[in-house]
Length: 117
Length: 112
Image (cartoon, rainbow over all chains, first blue to last red; front, side):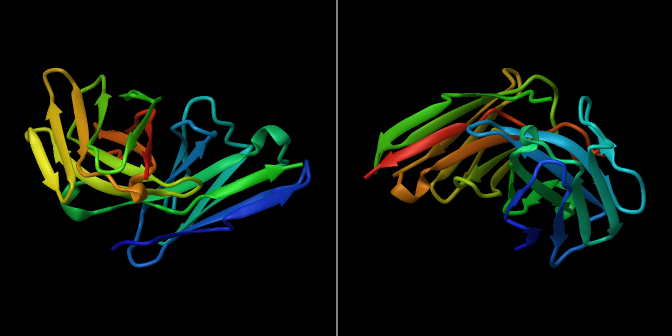
């Protein structure tokens, strides 16, 4: 089956630093990827849609200057949390849809747990 | 925005029993999907049901869809301890955007 790799799985950083999270589709090309944020025991909140070769589309209320998204190739999207603060601590997950006759089944990375001290 | 409402929010049953989770949504859809998430991990696709289907089976999973009521249910039969996870429904409403809208999820605990 399709595999999406997300790295790192866990990161601790100091307040004010930037953290980059990578999301790779390993066996298929993904012109679109999605980034989610998940708080404990809650659902996924869509942050933005990453589009290969163009600007990301951010959901309402998500700061684009805070969460920088780059989708420079058909297999890699990155999310950079800039000047991270403790309130940015969360679980971040990426996903990529795979064609499959228009079914839009999403394949998810394993997630990145970010802790900002 | 999260348009899906799931109930119950949490469900705890004994191994071997059946588990039923429900999902309601607000807009018209192309299909509805169910995903599973083990604690601290990504989501895994379980099953998809198209808007013109009423019931679908996959192994121990049975999904129903009632578009008139905008609701779906996921039944896991003969539950196992390994089924312990959170289960989310997700609706695909737009052919172009490929966005899925996730429900709030049901945390299922199977007690051995």
